[in-house]
Each structure stands twice: as C-alpha cells, then as structure tokens.
Image (cartoon, rainbow, N blue to C red; front, side):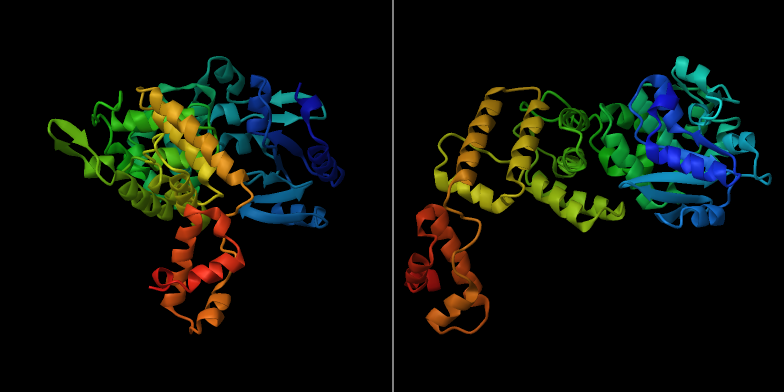
Length: 432
C-alpha cells in the first residue's frame, strides 16, 4: 500500500502544505510504481499553492525552480518536485492530471483518505500493460515533444506496448524532437541506457523513426554485416554489448559508441570486411556526438579513452613491461573499466570463447601490477630536480627526459627512485 511507502521527507512536505491550507497530492510515477510493486525512486507532488507560496513555506530548505510552476525541494540529500496545479482554477486537480503525458502517470494519491484519483483509466492501462497518451496524443506531444522519448523509455523499462493512436502520433510527429534542447534529450537517452534491456528502446526508436532524429550515426550500422570474428551486424553487436555491460552511465555510453565509426571505415579486403582504425575513429565520433548532447567534459574524456583503447590485442606472450605500458596508456584509474568493457565486447561477438580466457589472464596480470609496491604511474623526481641536476631551463627537453625516464621504469619499476633516476637522467640516451 502506498501509504506505508511514503518517506518521512514526503510526509513533512504534505503536512506543511496542508497545515497552510493548500490541497496537495502525490502524483505520477510513484503511484504507477507502487501499483506495479516496484521500488519508488521519485516522489512528485502537485498542490494548489503557487511557486511563491511553496518558496515561502520551505524557506528553511535548499530549493530551486526546475521549470515554470515547479520547485524542487532538497531534503536529506534527495530532491522532491512540487508542481502547482496547471490551469486557471488553483484547485482543479482533474485539469492538472489532464495535462500530463500518459494515463499511467496521470493519477494522484490523496494520503488523507488513502484514495487513488484516476480520471483517465491509468490503473486499467497498467493492468493491460499499455502506454496511452492522456486524451489527445497529438496535443500531448505538441505540448512537449520530449514525451516521445519519455514514452519510449517507459516502454523499454516496463515492457509495455503502445496504444495504437499514441504510436501513430509518435511516428507522425517524431520530427518535433528537433525542437527539444539537447540536454533534455541526453537525460532521456541516459535513462534508456540504464534500463535492463536498452536494446528494446533502440529498436523502438528505429521503428518510430526517432533514432534518425537524435542519433542518426547509430543507424549507419543497421543491417551492416561484419566478418568471421562476429556473429552479428554492427548495430546488433553494439546492442548486445550495451545489454550485457553493467548499467552504469560510463559503461553503457562506451558500449553505445565503441564501434559507431565502423560503417565509415569498412573496407573489403580479400573477401572479408575490415575496419582499420575504427577504435580511433569511433572515439572521435563519440566525442562529437556527446559534445552535441552536452555531456560533461569529464564524461566525454572517459568514454573517449575507453573506446580509443578497447582493441587491446593481448596474448600470453606479452612481457610485464607490455602490461605496464597498457596501464600507463589507459591510466590506472580506468584500466579495470577497460577490461570490464572489453570482456562485454568480446561476449557480444558471439564467437571464440578463448578470447575471454585471455582477458581473464590479462586482468590478473593487471591486478598484480596495480598491487605492486613499485608505482609506475608517477616519477619519483620532478622537472625542477631534473633541471637543477642537468643545468637546463624549462622547455620541451625536460618533458622529453621525463618521458624517456618513464619508459625506463616501465621496463624496470625498481628504478623509480630519486637516486637511480638522476643517474639515468645524466645518460646520453635519456637526454637525447
């Protein structure tokens, strides 16, 4: 029962608004998820109080305006959205619910009498696993075209089907997504990626024509065959990788973009498709697409690093120095993520389980190197010490010496101490 699931922070918000004489209800996904027996992650409320009233009533709390008519209150480190009733009448709950996107989200809960208010049949649509726009689907989409992606995300997450009229409206008006801010598209895209089976959402995007609007580059690999190392087409391999990697934004985004450039570099050599340089090209495309979608510079940098280095090519003949070079190239902070991703990538090939044994072997060797007391991630001397010892001024030569010293400690980590490094810095082959 929803009443027993309401957290104390939501109870505080309800009580404060009611005490001030306002109507207030729990709305949206919390009711839907409660009816489905799912964990409730978002608690949204609607009230007859306007945003200024809300601001005043919660002046002791951190808060901000999400968009006109909605304030977000921060309590105990969590965000709670409080939206003023839509419409001319300040206490017209039904009008407010009529302006919401889908019937399964257009329900309200009155905790005073423990009643679900459901004027548009949301409970029935949950029972029948249907996503249906409230009243007129065209109008709902025109009010906010992002509802197209939101509907696809909910369908992906819950495994629900679309009401035919709602589906028709999505297909007909998908072009309106071009008017939506890239940041909002990014947020829905990430939510789709974090569902249990994101591939279902991307197949829906193809079916509804939305993928060509928001990620046309991904469509380039659709039905494009690969080679004997792969059981699947480029697009299907990407989807298999996305589904199999853990639901973390970094890992799922890396999976989504890791082979995105393959159609552009694909060449047939002796009857086999080859993809020379696809990892570098895919990393650059990922950077361009993620920049367009306004991802953070940090996330772009991390995804690009993993994609650029994902074609490892390890074999048991590698020496320890080669393992250390890989760690150095990728960075110790991302090397374990790279191995995790590469394992999912190889599983999604659908072939050659021996490659997984090699990845397991490499993982153990990397763990051994990371646990070694000899740290190769940082030189034991800095540039100033080198300049003083060699009588040099700041410049490119100092940087080259440091690079040469790094190569020497990769070959022999025991040398990473100030005394040995100063001796090496004076040697001719290090200076040149």
